[in-house]
Image (cartoon, rainbow over all chains, first blue to last red; front, top):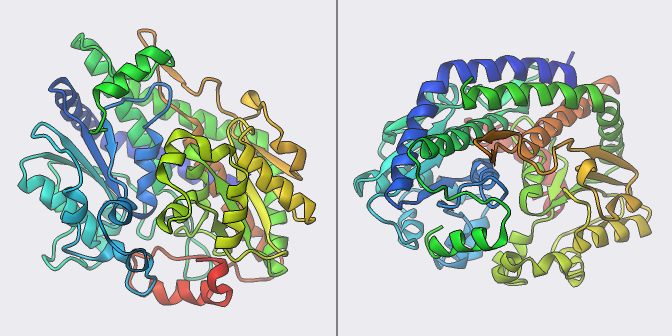
Length: 242
Length: 236
């Protein structure tokens, strides 16, 4: 029987698997981001579709790191000149397109020491792969968050024949199932997705670890603490970049 | 204990708490959503800033129920009806005329109901959306953090889900620095528990639940469009 309790119980098991199997990858990502921040770098976060939630979750709130920049899909329209009809076309889904990501990438002030986090559950769509590819070609460290079960079960949509995880210096598997939904039903479709929950746990635990590593190095923390003057000064420091 | 493990342990504890404290409410809300959907209505979701995470978690989601729709300020920005600057400055959340723009932009229906997300329950725009719905006799569910609640959103709500987050929303401390937000993750878990209970509502009634497949599975577009096409612009 499917109900809230079954979801909770299966999620509990999944979170145990996620921590046990990925703690070393999350640690490696935290180290890379700590190094980037200590060189006055910024972390550019890009996720299409529901993957955008990870960036939102660790930004603009008490305890959040300031040098994080969300590359917003909507910037394609508001800053990148893509017509809204093209962006919203249900029959030719924008996030699947190859060879358009450069329009977004070129909008931002990206410095050599910056790190990228690219998130996609399936890891097969054009734009995420092109962003990771561009970042890598430009010499940036790339952290990928994806579902290995999903990505390995699907054919690539990118003309290179590659999938997102192949572009990662560090790859964190969110341990979600193929198709993202956790609970088997009697029908074809499974129910209750887990990628946002797993991605948030990865992001929040990683952010906490980054702060701990910065403290160990006695680096002045670029973290919002609720003090207006402090927070505004920090935002000013990263203005135009984050 | 390492800080990453602390976060994972806390989340699991909060998932248990959310279930224990709110399973009855989640069942009631799921039944209210199910009744609305079965009578031709769409559940309209709206939340701003971090509240948008809950909206995204229920709206057009892999393994989710199809008959939700998100009211998003971003859609108004993309179509030139409001400016990104007004969102960034926070002015938009106090501008009640934006409720008119949302009503004009989307195809809303009297059979619809609303699920409105606001940590403090105090954003004038979200309260206005609730007030208008209530005035028309539509059902409204509020999702707030009861510990932090300081507004009037719940005056217009039939049922309330509690995010049950700390105030301030930081769960861990590193040498005096507060880190580790739980509210969005716990809210996402509540959203998925709701999904499970809506599915159960359909099955218990002898009906097939309209479950979406991940759009990144071969053949999913055909399945998903068959669920959403009958609603036209009301859903997508």
